[in-house]
Image (cartoon, rainbow, N blue to C red; front, top):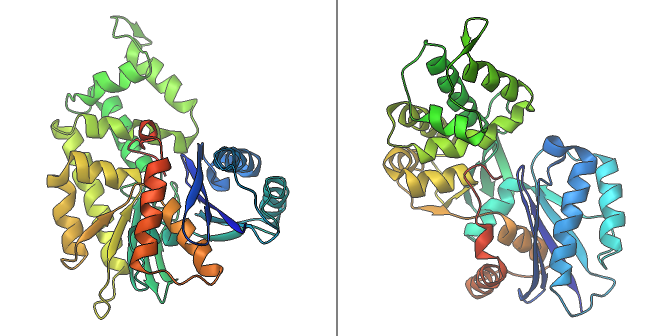
Length: 339
């Protein structure tokens, strides 16, 4: 049977599904970061391979020589990555080079099968896109933690840590974020100082500088957990404003269409702090209803079907959404910084 291995490769986690050309899903797998920018080629191949193997393990039927893999992925793709993935997937029954599509398309087609519209992703990083004729016509953002990504999981986590350090250093207001950050790093609040600085501050600095910069995204959930705290609300309000600005910069006033939101920062924002996120995003979308999706794996499957010449209608789209939802373990719901 001709199958498609469809993968959504995020900066924090990867999802894979095996399906046939009728949109019936047979297996689902999940693993860690499949993004080579975030994890390197070796790390990305390892996690993409794990997700694929787990999806295939849930499929008891066989594949034929036309079965192929497609990946929705952010960032640049090297020949080495393609070569390594081709070998890994061939061993699972999916031949040829895997097709790589932008993660924006994976997110967009997870929420709609309409050919024209917009997508906004805020997970570990941020990016927005305008989709025309089913292809990515314009992208904004996605420049990474060092050069952009305002409102991303990294950006929120960074602001959380700056606020906590300022509070411990006597340079900023008290905030509920302090206790949450210290607890998350198992840092005690015992009295004492090191060269005139609070012991907890010195330990926090050591722990933080030992992380990769992008690792600050792990602290983003704490802003949502403390969303009633004034400092946390200021961080989230600024994040929402940055995301709204990014979406607005992508829109064409002459082109209407669905607006699909992806990435777990947006999922958490709309669920935990809708009073902060909903209004600016709705305004930036021109009043169009916002469609939130948990990840881009349905869209990756849609892209695979389209490449195979399958016409996507509402019935097939709904079948695919249901199939993925039934296979997706409820215990693997994404946290607020997954990509």
